[in-house]
Length: 160
Image 1: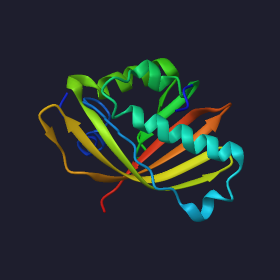
Image 2: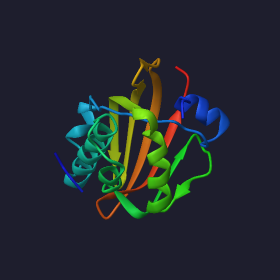
Image 3: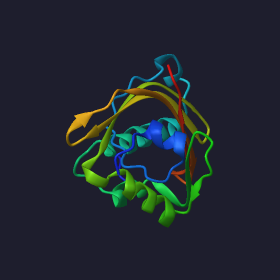
């Protein structure tokens, strides 16, 4: 391993980021093996970092502090083109809301692309609340690296 309120994400995206209850992710990955041989050592490392980062979201013992260890101080996070939350302090505060009530996300990665400082993957996320699992939904995650950490993270949530 490499170290460094009740609305679903879809509902939140529709209504903005306020009130987002949680996000949990246990990552499982299936890489685009035809591209793996073409990735540089740095690209391979970045893909591994993203996979580990995603797995933290589903681990009941992980903390926002651990998650933020993968992100730069000047990081940004946004969903579906909404205004970005920027800076480690504000991103961490937002991420804290994702874990309220014990909510986590299971992230299953289906395909990964890496080029230079960019890692992109398609995956299926399932919101897992203490009392239920929501229907899985397709997502594309885009990560931009700077100095070995995630500087930008954008989620594109779409209907299959």
